[in-house]
Each structure stands twice: as structure tokens, then as C-alpha cells.
Amino acid sequence: MRFLTAEKIHNGQGWLPDGSVLEVADNGAIISISNEPNNEAVFYEGILAPGFVNVHCHLELCHMKGLIPEHTNLIPFLKNIPLHRNDFTEEQKKAARHEGYSELVRNGIVAVGDIANTTDSLDVRALDQLHCYTFVESLGFNAANAARSFNYAIATYNTYATQHAGEKLLKQAIVPHAPYSVSSALFKLIDGHKDGVTIAIHNQESEEENKYFTTKEGSVPDLLHAFGIDDSLFTPSGRSSLQSYLEWLSPGHPMIFVHNTYTKREDVQFAQGSRKEVFWCLCPNANLYIENKLPDVEMFVSEGANICIGTDSLASNHQLCVLSELYSIKEQYPQISWETLLTWGTMNGAMALQLHDVVGTIETGKKPGIVQITGINALSARPAVVRII
Image 1 (cartoon, one colour):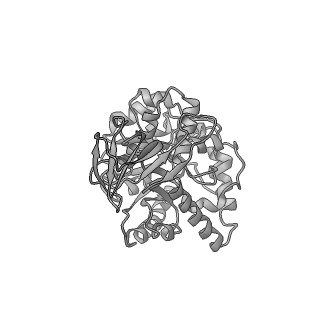
Image 2 (cartoon, helix red, strand yellow):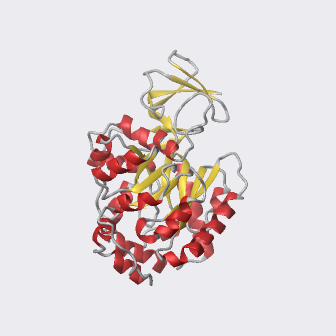
Image 3 (spheres, rainbow, N blue to C red):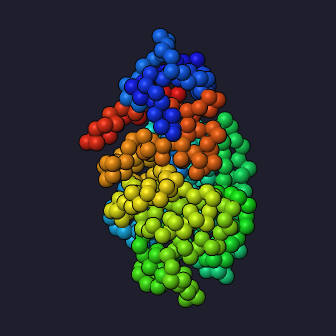
């Protein structure tokens, strides 16, 4: 066992009293938390905190790092993904995935919500270094092809579901990609797959998405037509995308809304008023990379939103680091305390992925992983994160 103490310790919910000591077993389990002085305790500069939780990541796109220019806006960005996704050998893709996975581990991340359109990420899940919740995306805007699209997702899901789990937890669910890429018929098939399973969805990442559902104007039709999709039968609802598609999903599903760059207060109120479990996953560095805009974080805070953090993919980010995401929020919203930010990056993420029984907080019996954070008060320099356990 080891005894650890630091200038400050964040337990995932808030600061522990100064001078607190963690007793940690050799296998990483928290044995006890004490306020009593302990001469055996190793002192660490900066902050000790639980391992981070990355709620939204596309590991299968790691090979696309740096290929798409920044600030293109979402629709041109999405058009570029299929154009270049397969410009690599399988070995190159595999090497990039493994490096991306290693980067998550190096940056103190202990659990990831990984977005999968294929079975490519099976190999990194098998490394058994991270708890992994794989969200198998289903896409198909043509209602006539809903069954075919769903059956493809089912086959992919089943492959993940049969993968043997080691020490780390492996979970999976079928989810819709985004409102503009999934028909109402496909939404309903996804909804009926598993009762009560968590649904994660790319939400209001672009203002064009809201325009499409409100008036069918903007550039979403251009995106669909570029992919050979006929949207002539789509009728706009006159409401935002979130308020339009949420009625196609049963209220028993916990929801993770991802990105939320153009989510309005009335959308947050609508979702939280109709669902018991709602999480809002912010991916600030990806939002800046694509749209050069952050969500209205202050609005989410004022609405009592459960905020968690994702990195999106290396196609839309320079690194896979939850702490870097928190720094980007802090730079734009300096009034938000580090005590709050660290909760978003740890406990809230674990709750969103239904992994809070094992990670996210420093509590007796858990194996949350412990990270050391230094230089947290210097906004001009990103801090170092060191894996301790």
C-alpha cells in the first residue's frame, strides 16, 4: 500500500480538507481517506484528483489527425471525413488508433466513451487499460432503408458485445449519429433496441442543424445531397433539432447530448424537463477547431446542467486530453472554479457513462486512478498530468 498527500486533493466532487491523506492499495483501490497527519505519506506538488473520464472520443479516426483544416465549419468538415477516411492502409489506421489510445492513458484518462461506426476499435479495447463504453453509431436518413441501416449497427454491436472483458469494464450501445443523419424510423428502431440504455448523440454542433429542422434551409440539404441522400420527404417541424427528435426516443433512456455549440436555454429546459437523466458533453477544443465557437457554458451552469467533457477525434482536435479541454473552458470563462471544472472531468463523466461505481471519485473501495496536476493556476502554460497509479 501507499500513502499519498498533496497541496490539494480533489475527490471528484470537491476539495478534501487540507492535509488529507489517501491510503491506496497496490492494485489502486482506495483503502481509506484520513485527515490525520501521516509520516509515511508521500507529498505531491499541485493537485491529486481521480483519473479523468473522456465521454466522447472517436478512436477510429485517429489516423486523420491534421488532415482537415481548422475553422471550416461543420458541414464542410463532415464532407471531408469520407473523402479522406480511407486514404490509409489498415496498418496505418491501427498504429494511429494505438497511439491515440496510449495518449489517453498518458493524459490520465481512465474511462472513455468511444464512438464506433466499424469494429476497428476492438483491438484497442482489448488492451484493457481503460474502461470503455462503445457507442455504435447508426446512420441513415432514408426511412425506407432504416431496417438495413439498423441491421448493420446490430451486427457491429454484437461483435463488441461478445468481446471478452478483462479487468476493465466494457459496455456498448447502439445510438443515433446526429439528427440530420438519422430518420425518425431509424430513431425508433434504435430506441427499441435496449430499454434504459444510455443514448449519446451529436447535438446542435452547427446552427445549420437548427435551421434544417426549423425551416429546411441552410447547408444541411447540400450535405445530404452530396452523399446522394434524398430528403424530399423531410418536413421541418418549426422547432429546434433537439425539440424535434427527442420525441422519437423514450424518456427512460439516459441522454448524453454531445457538443451543444448552438444549444439554447429553451432546449436545455425542454430536455431536462422531459428526462430524468440528462448529461451535456462539451468538447470545447473540437468546437474551436471546427466552428471556432464555444457553447454558452454559463447558460448551462445557470440551468443546473450535468456537464461532462469529451475530446471528439484527432480529426478535429490536436490532442486527446480532458485537462486541455478544461483549460479551454477556463480561458473563456475564468469565473468557473477549478473545483467545478475538475468535477466535470471526473465524477460527472463517470456518471454519464454509468461507470460511477468504479471510477470518477476518490472513495473507499473504488479504483479511480489518481492523477497529479501541476501548474493549474497558470493559464499561460498548460499543466503536466502525471499518472501515479
